[in-house]
Image 1 (cartoon, rainbow, N blue to C red):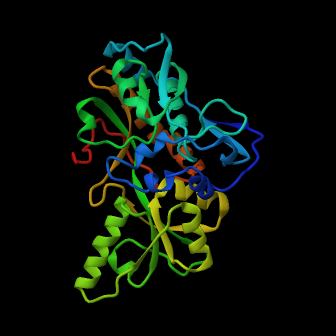
Image 2 (image 1 turned 45 degrees about the horizontal axis):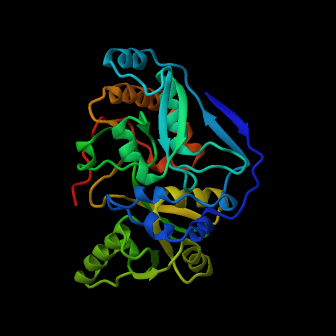
Image 3 (image 1 turned 135 degrees about the vertical axis):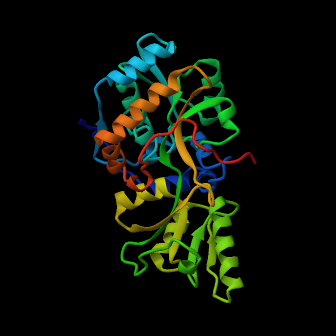
Length: 331
């Protein structure tokens, strides 16, 4: 069930420019190793650069009996009785940000969190936190749960339980009128100029693909390095580059808002391994089983898909939520 909420938000600069304004965020957002893609959540975007749709749509659900029963049987006690206290980092759309004139975060991660709370029959109690603060906050019992683009890693699984709800993807984007229709393997980038962040996981993907091309006697791609997303997007729009390659979530939002770019291919964020985004709780506190039931119910009844579609992240959808899936290996 969806409820529209008029925000009266003036559309500011595009999300690409937002990334440029926040010093250093572009490089951090483009590092999808286990130590960087989600860690970029630490940097909040300045209020004056918030980008938003004219209308933000929150999706809701009713308490899910099976999940409520599982929660009661688990013995889990929320930090505040009757409430589920959920940590979110507010940085960039569409994942999580604070719209102009608002005090609470909006985006995919807050809405997934609110749906979990509602499905458990609890009041949604969001807390906007700096990225660096959530690990200790979850361990110490300050927060019951986090939904904030957290990638599952084997190291994190030693301290937290996870219920997956999105794929962590990197995306190839081209101009909306480009003749390029698909980039999914090394052969597709031969001879292209591709904007990428230096020192990032996606750079490593391109370097590996270029080696594959040169070993086969084919022309490699030219990698174009830019200090910020705005400059990279300008290179794309002016024809100095053929494609950009970076975190899919923010690029998908920019494509949705501006119409200037289109998605032509995705690669797992943990390439060559698959990376999962998940809700996280303190290890062994009993909450994750009930959370998993809620997520799978939302996937089955279509509510989950509606959330991702609204925020332009359909390509990151999963067909089921898993408890403690295989995580990215320890570095």
